[in-house]
Image 1: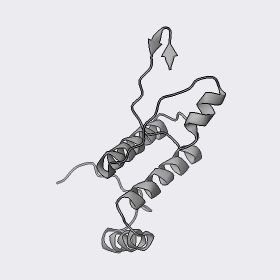
Image 2: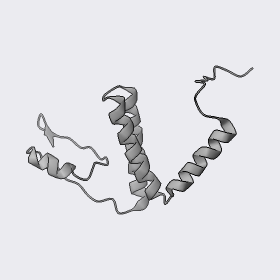
Image 3: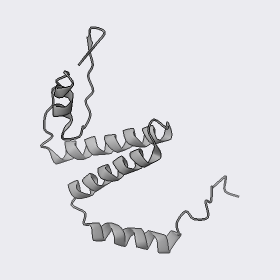
Amino acid sequence: MWYNGIMRIFKKLIRDNMPEIMAQKGTPIHTRMLEDDAEFIAALENKLLEEAQELRNKENPALVQIAYMQEILDALQKAYGILPEEIAEERKRKLEERGGFEKRLFLENEQ
């Protein structure tokens, strides 16, 4: 993609249908498949950080960003070979051990 005579380079994970969507808009893009699991996981982790920053910056409605982040987390779970039941079990264990965030406690310092 060219911007003011300069090719824009992104180097980031994109959704599966984006090449077709961009081509329909007249902006073909170059992609490659990440076949290496470690590279794919790193790209997912980077995408999660990117979307978390967009949530913080209020670039999109919270619903949109959180849904997208959940989709990335689901992909990470699958890439790591973690079963949904394992996630639920770990969440329950952590909740029982340390509690949740219902009280909205914010650590200021240690005494």
